[in-house]
Length: 162
Image (tube, rainbow, N blue to C red):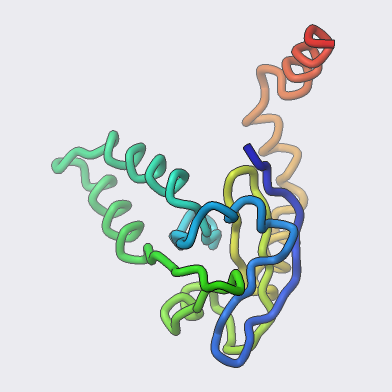
C-alpha cells in the first residue's frame, strides 16, 4: 500500500485542470477516477475508488432516518461529492462548483497534500490560513488522538520484527 505524504504547491491550467503531482502518481496509478468530497474544517479529499467506497460504507453504517445529525451530514456530504475522470496526462478538471467550495480562483494556486491513503486539496490561501490558525492546537490534538501510545506501539512493533 502506498502512503501519500507531503505538500505540493501547484496551479491549474487555463482549462481548470489540475495535474496530479508526480509524488502522488503511485497512489492513483491503477485508477482512472478520483472522488472529490468535503471533510471537516474546510478540508476536501481526492480519493481512489476503494477509499471512496470504504468511506461510503462507513457513512451508511451510521444511517438512521430519525437522526437529524445523520440527515444533515449525509445531505451535505453527498451533495458536494463528485467523481473526477483522470485523463491520460494525469489531470482532473475542477468544475466551477469545486472551485467555489475550495474558495479557489480560476488559474489560482492550489495545495495537494498527501494524507495516508488520501489526497487533500486546498486553495493555497485557505491552506495557509488553516495552518496558521491550527499551529498551536496541533500538540493538543495529537495528545487527544494518541493518548494511549502513538509512539510506543509502532516503535515496539518495529523492534519486535527486527
